[in-house]
Length: 298
Ligand SMILES: [Zn+2]
Image (cartoon, rainbow, N blue to C red):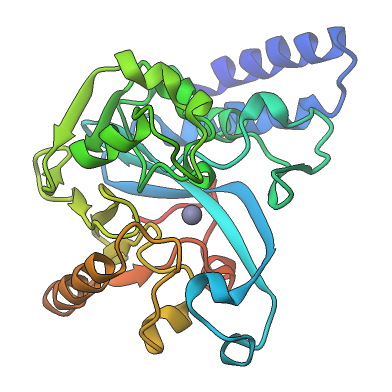
């Protein structure tokens, strides 16, 4: 997009904002236009880290840990991630509070007592020049409610899911930590269904969905080969806290703890062999150090 088009876009967007008396939206218009100029399309693989909320204090026992083994409040962050590749885009995990439930004025909304968010995913994508309908692929680490909130926005994308996960998501049985309303539109989405298998998303080995069952039956992770940053593994909820890793603990609510441990062993081998950096997605100290969108990793 050239400068003139960007300016026109700001003016159009701002006049819309004025009509609805939302003056604060002007800044967002400028950011959206500038972001659109910067980010579409990318010749090189990029990873953007987006803010999809926080989860407030939980009992460390849920993660197999005693209070004195953690020695702090167990709070989580919940990022979403946008991957931009020359051949398309992938959204990885889509938050814990649906956009339509987050108010315009930036106040924090709290759902189910602990799931908090104050920023919508849609506008964060718009600021980078994307709309949900532009996103080529959707993949979530797993079906738990803190990862699926905005899945319906991506019903026009191709959804990459493990068969075992799909079966739980649409099962008629009582299933915990599940919010089927947030992903019901995926039922009819184009789908790539994997049978406990890895998947090379763009066919060049740079973006790979990795099967990692245990936390849920079809839990998966995302491996990226970034040119400057190097290899990176987004671990989903294979771990929530670093202490699960150092003290060998498994959450009490995992689908199959023994399976989690077997997966973790394989992942350790993979990390060794690939040299990848591991990001524990929910870990606040990991997240605090990350570049956030509109900055990116490449
Ligand atoms: Zn989670």
